[in-house]
Length: 265
Image 1: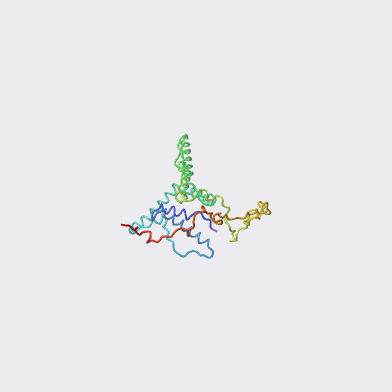
Image 2: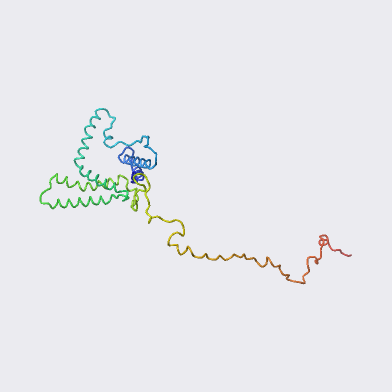
């Protein structure tokens, strides 16, 4: 089982901060490629993808490539390896030290989470300051070889912080690997057995803590009696018993009401 190191999140972070054809874009593409490979490996029965993934060439190949003719190509074939050789002689030990430290951090990163770059910058600055003070108070003037050897350690520490920053570890949540107990499957693909003391009982009233509630009598439920207004069941009493009914009132015809009274001469 391939361990994940947040390749997808780191690849997106680096991709948004890179330009096409640069080393940063190449790192983003490599991170995305590894994240895709891990996702395919997690699915049973899925083979390696046959789709060709375009990856930006390395810096060495980009510097060798040219379309300016055979003369320019020959010059690049001579000067590009020479430049890389000079850089290796100047800071090669520092780069090897940084690669070793970063490899150890990368190996333990699933348990660590985010890798921080600023402590390595501070450590490199402190070591450089101490070495400078030591060289200043020395009676004999240090030689070129001594100076070259001294600067490898602070440069190596600075390169570790720089490489952590360039690989997009800022996209990882701090302490993202804390609390992990390892993969849920064994090396042969079978699931790990959970210890008896770690089993959680989900059935209610089966653990010891609920023993006192198991035999407790149920509380009586009071019947609900609907309340009915008194006016609905009892008739309304007569306010005036001497008041005549509607049948006792005189009935007037419309013509009698609106006829003009007769006048006598």
